[in-house]
Amino acid sequence: MEKIIKKYDRKIALLEEKIHAQDVKIQNLEKKCFTPTKDALKEGEETSIQPNVSKGGNNTGMQSKRQASSRHANVERIAEGIVR
Image (cartoon, rainbow, N blue to C red; front, side, top):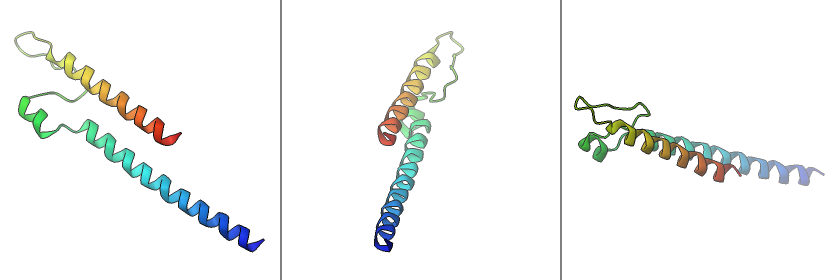
């Protein structure tokens, strides 16, 4: 009986380590998706969800809003695949 308990304790410990590693990976992916890249900053791209309306009346923020929304949806899909 003690052997069986030790066996399951090891399995549980491995699963807990795996869950922790996946949590760290998810956090890193979320940070990466919501942090502007150097290229985006050079181009003046707005990566937040808030629309950015320029003085000339062009609503370039709508494109950025869609991109940010798309990135968020991708992160959620990735996270769902990992959790399942």
